[in-house]
Amino acid sequence: MAAESYFWTKKQDNGNVRIGLNDSGRDDLGQISFIDVPATGTKLTNGGKFVAVEAEKAVTDIDSPVDGEIVTVNQKAIDQPELLDSSDENDNWIVEVKA
Image (tube, rainbow, N blue to C red; front, side):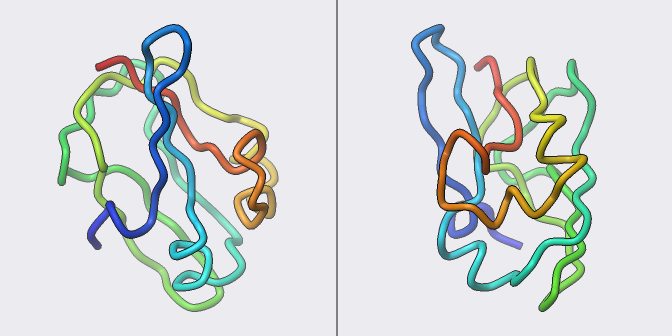
């Protein structure tokens, strides 16, 4: 599934890029019950495999919107996937990537 329609990306003060679920992603997927995120240190390729999601409307793999290495994972959102349904970027981010 194409990533650019599902995620927001935001450059952080430290130069890393944070990736989170946007309104379109929430609308298309519905309530998320599970998300499988690669571990810290995993290298992402724009358009390559990123996350697997189980949600109300779809069970799918979603491609990465960026190139880089995962440096931080939002473990709180992994443990409580309902946070991804929030429109608050402090809650609905998934990973931080170093380009």
